[in-house]
Picture 1 (tube, rainbow, N blue to C red):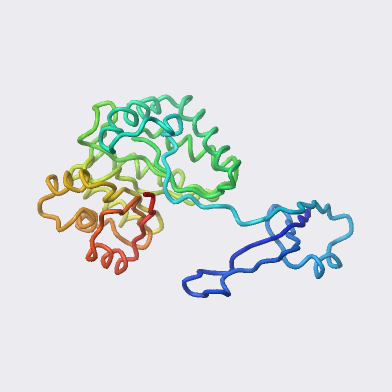
Picture 2 (tube, rainbow, N blue to C red):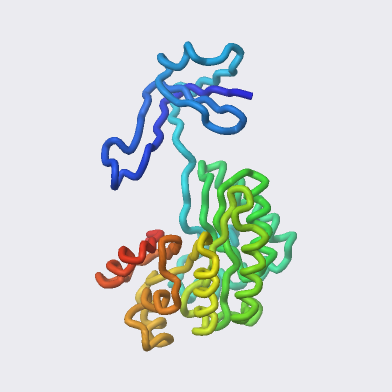
Length: 291
């Protein structure tokens, strides 16, 4: 079934870094045509009205703007219930709020309930694609992928790998992290609009052996993503330097374990130095800059 929508329309033709001012099209009075759930045409209303098939429903959104769905490149769906918790420094906040909250995601019913609410909230706010952390539990990954698949969303997610410097109730092992992640890749990656991300939480919560196995997973599956955190605050950076004294920098830890590349996305990246930025550029790695 065809549907048409009339409003101001803004959409993009390519990367502004490559195309500059020709990267987008804007129609002050435009029409967007949907056929079988996919966009089939877009243009000026004056030009398109005559070509609309007789009987095509036309919905008017005067004074409104239609844009492509938003993309969120870093979010934790399991932290939905602690949004706006009282401010703390990162490491204290993890211990006080995050880890106790994530413990509940071993329960598949709870995980499913939060995933349903989370995906509905994304869509309600115009976000149709997201890259999200689950928890260490496979139940949490199944929940977020199931909810996104049901809504035809593009979702990139992965099981958190975490085998040290965390509570026992959230700790896996290098072997468990590898095996469970591999099974989840086989189950969910490229299913509909879903894609998997190998997810070592951040360097301090994974041993060298686990970091090695996360890098191995990333190299063994060239079409998956990798997501983690880097250089969010100074105390975290200092902690990583103590834990990985052989590494040049926080970012270098990930490079030593084969975790950089065009499909690797690291959250925050506030306290990087010039050499780190050069390595990001040279390897095609990306920062999801969330200050």
